[in-house]
Length: 451
Image (cartoon, rainbow, N blue to C red):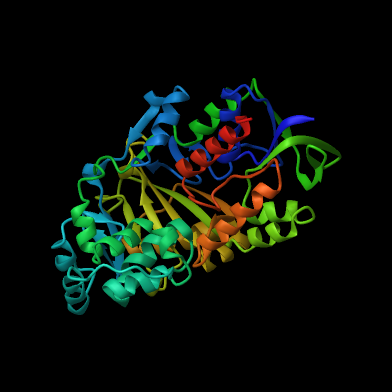
């Protein structure tokens, strides 16, 4: 019987294999796809570095930088061009800049909440009065309810919804404020006012850079991990069909065979984990199945720089659903990071989520690129014909931390210890960013290594 079996070869599975190897614990990793990395994939197309999934991580998650340094690729880390960082929100068909000191919901310079063109006078008055709110502690509620209570409906439609759509692909009416924005719920509890909380904590996190990435793209992280785990982890290509408890461990039913292990790490989406353990632990499987996921589509389009008549003076723009568009957001790759696009080209990465992503899932690449090009031209007003495009579809890859997720997670984590040797990794539980996935996998490896 093997010591550890890992199901899933994305960042969670690979980082778990790495941390186990560092503790001299061999493992087998099962991945049914033809490549490793999950949603992390970097392609070099016509000299352009095209990210199919995440293009960076938040610099404030300092443990990720330590992890990269441990892998020996710290010299490849690059920061976003924060001197040019500006994000726009489409309002009545025009791109309106967000306050440059914005921290998700509120600017560190409070007066910018009153001078922005994003809101009307009534919302600005409400924001001014929000400063004087008294501290309060409430039960979990939706992001929409939380933001509406502090700033009003206009802030829900033109701030919370577009900002969160690109991350969670879900409406703020369903997302849990406690899970999605715990820092701001904490400000409410301590200060009453979100604006006052952001202002008082404005120097806690350095502003530059906001994002970190790797010079060769995020795919470099996967390539490095693949090399580093080669000596201690066997990569097995094939699908795990089911899991069942056996003496001292777990039996894995495979395509055309079987395997057994003392420990099993399910580094896969919660709904896939639910399917595997349904026979062995139906109640736990039911809880996992309740964690919702949404699909997303990334459409990258490149244009000739010559004749491209829209200034790329920012990182990109967000499209509120109130504007009735198909896109959720667009990143201007030329601006966000250096050396990813040749000087004679412009590269735009557009994101579709929700219903738009569901429609794109069954449409041809040509249709998706044509529709995306038309909408980009609508919001940006440029001319020119794309020189190439690339579409990447991610089916049910974005977890939704809905109202009640915290309680559900507590129930899940209470049941897992009753199934010795079972471990849940991935983005469906307590953090969906790359650093969060890495840290969860590190903790799992540490628990396995502890007698």
